[in-house]
Every structure is written in C-alpha cells, then in structure tokens.
Image 1 (cartoon, rainbow, N blue to C red):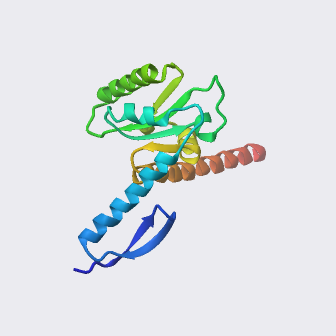
Image 2: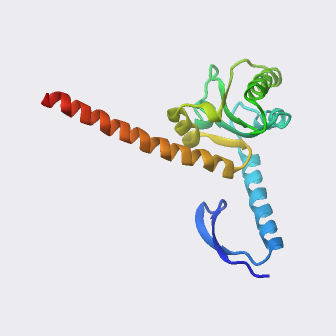
Length: 180
C-alpha cells in the first residue's frame, strides 16, 4: 500500500517537509524514531543545580500531559534565590477542581522531593498571553510532546494579532483625542 505525499513537521531538522508514507508500519516506525530522538534530546538536557530527572519522575505520577520549565532555570540565569517555574497541562478529562487538586499535589510532591518550597506551577490553559509567550520562547519541554506545545503556539499567534489590533485601536483613539 502506498500513501500519498503529505506535509509533515520534522522535529529532528525543525523543518516543514513533504514525506511519502509508504505503509502504516513505515509511519509507525518513523513516529517512533522521532519520539526516541525527542526523548534522547530531553535526556541530554542538563540544567545546572536542577534535577530534571527527579522532576520528571514526580510528574510521571500525576495526570499531567505536558510540562515546560520556564523562567530563570530555563534561561540559564538562575541564582540561589530563584524559584522553579513549571507550566503544566493536565488531562482534559479532569474537572476544574480535579485539575486544581492535581496542581496542588504536584507542588507538594515537588517540594518534598526537591527539598525546596520555591516552586511555581501554573496551568498552561490559564496563563496570560504575555506569560504564555515567555513560556514558549524561553521554556524547555521536560514532559510531553512537542505537538501539544504547538497548540499553544497557535494561541500566541492569535493573541498577538488581537493585541496588535488593540494597540492600533488605542493609537486611533489617541489620534482622535488630538483632533478633538
């Protein structure tokens, strides 16, 4: 069975490409290779004075589906007073109260395992646009799939466009005030 050419995002090269998927088995093997590459890259990620593997171990025991380290640790300018900033997405099947409880449990477990209370966990679905942009720009994916991160990238583009429209409207109002 021969598949048709389709647009694919190649995470190894970081490029949009056309691939001809020959069989379902070939597709599965390709996806497995990409996922292994991604996991290997994450394994090679070391952050000074932060045990990422321990964080991932704790996250693995929660209903989190995506976790991005952001802030000073992700940028590489953390100091002894820096907190650990994590943006987390929980499974959609959880109710709002269950997500809140999962977030509190995650903070409690991380506090115990990392022996620090300097931990900030924010739900990705509720962060303001400016923070979302910072998370996506400087953040390091430590748990989950890059495909899930792309959903939030799309939101940032839409939000930025809306913000640009608001800024243009503010400029128009300022111009009207000068005229009147």
